[in-house]
Image 1 (cartoon, helix red, strand yellow):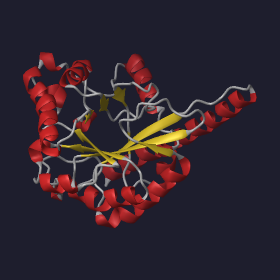
Image 2 (tube, one colour; image 1 turned 135 degrees about the vertical axis):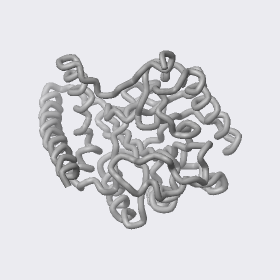
Image 3 (cartoon, one colour; image 1 turned 45 degrees about the vertical axis):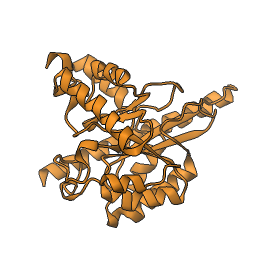
Length: 287
């Protein structure tokens, strides 16, 4: 009970800060327009894990809101953002059956591109980890290889999420290389297509892991830092905002509108002031 209350208070605090951030952003944009400055294009990348059957209507509402307020982009988009246009990228980690059955149909119906990050070493199994904010993922199944092969390729881009979902910074460099290189090779063999995208399990990474991703042949990697996406068309590391079908409607609205992108800057400031880092990211070469 205390833990749930604390979680709600933290969530509310972030919500109110985000509301203030959004208001300041709107005022700043209005002031810039009065000075004759053209607003640049913006983009947020969001990531889901599971979408349970009872959450499908909520997810559909979220996608309708996204369509009304942003232009959907594919995760491998490489062109400059359209000035003055808000964009959004949808990604789903883990390859759970619930997301295939409940999220994918809603995305295809609206012609929204999606990046699906897969664990080739765990296909057809029950996850051995707990997803943030829920206690149901341990009852889920990861899709089988046959199920993945049935998915349409026109709007779905597949990417790697490692072989077995480890905490990469805690691995030796040899084991980290196996997770990064082998997962890409296995997916390319399984799906008969190039795999150029990767997302970090638990969002945990460090500079050496980013370099290893380059060596493995990935062209873009995704974190869970809620930073603006595609600020550079050729960027290699792209931040994402965590979303869930159970997000409050105002909470989701603000995430799509970019109001949660204050968090990395505040975390960096906190780290400089108090020495409290946003993430523990040990170097794999030292483990």
